[in-house]
Length: 110
Length: 122
Image (cartoon, rainbow over the protein chains, first blue to last red):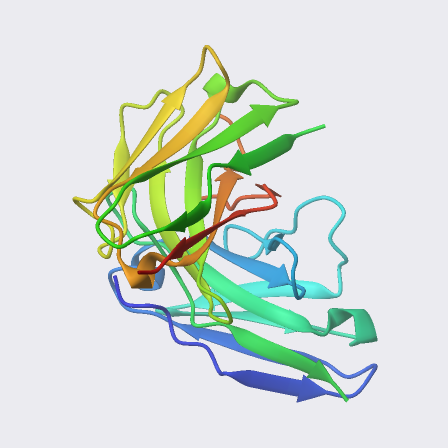
């Protein structure tokens, strides 16, 4: 159960698009489509942004999109807004009812 | 609306035990799998434990396996985390979280509690 690998930080200017990567292994992302993404603002509980690699829960802006290829997943935020500044975590099913989170990425809006 | 309220956190000494509770309301608790997730101060999210909707399937993260036990009481709509042999690196805010869809798992957790802080220190 090693944590999935994410870049420590990603930044972009308002209106730009950014992509956060999440690298796993054949035991987790590579073997299942069950990848989710969470946004967390300081002092708040995480918020589900993407599930099943590319699906958006109702109420989540369509500026957020997800994809998966092989043992990696990614989250793209388009039309970056100041309110998107937060920490983002990926999470994958890893078999046998176990899960693993990513190391987390701090998104800064310049 | 869905509400999850954790309780039971506090300051404890290494080697002792603590039981966390998560009171669920606003949905049919017995139909949903549940998780515990923790976050050490200033650190990232860490998955701790899972229980299926019926409590028959459970599993744990490696750091807590053999020390923590997840359970649920669907008659009282409560989720529990029994934590034994606590260590300093168990210090964290503990969140309970509900699966996205009933009778399934792996589809993310759209509902989280506010968290309860556990501090393990001598």
